[in-house]
Image 1 (tube, rainbow, N blue to C red):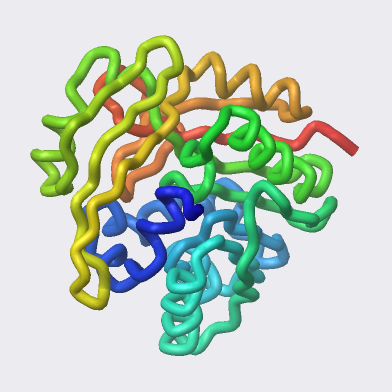
Image 2 (image 1 turned 90 degrees about the vertical axis):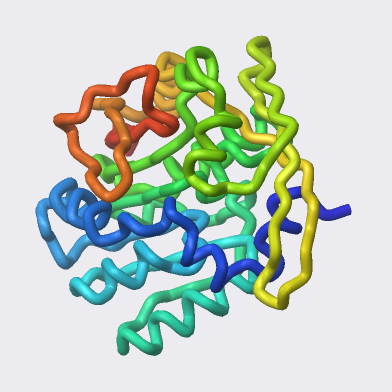
Length: 252
């Protein structure tokens, strides 16, 4: 049986690129470049790369990028983008819970809920972070954006999604598990209408810090996450749907 995230992204690549939350790519890549000192020798892994919007932009700027995603449709779109941009990106289909990279990359990133926070259990989400850590070289950098649990505690996510034109309903946020369930009504790239029950895991900043420390990360910073304007100067608050996390691999 397919999980909800497999159904959503089965045939939703072109439509995905039109979503409001995908429109800040260049500004986000500006921040990523700054974090690695504009060093073109750095190898980058994009976990849950989707349609390759960050991976292709980084390749255009001269970086060696590998992108992995579970969705074949998303990857096909990413490959088309790379060809149009006349760049090479090593795209491959893979499950973020089962990656076998080991000590290979200078930067690993998981942006815009690329795999992490979508899984059925906390253990699966944790395994994705563990695989990101394993893929990094010593002192390599990790950049993550994920759902901020402070937001649904203080706000209605239903109202937020309505304001941004995202078609979902029947929201329920469980304050004990920090999981949100909702019903999403969508039309895929072939025009087929679908109704899918989704579940997302929100995280407290303290949880993310603890997870990363237990995995062997250091210099952990958590910031606000405005679309297209990532910065260490943005303080996280209860009004941010997402948080931006930056850390370094402390292990050898």
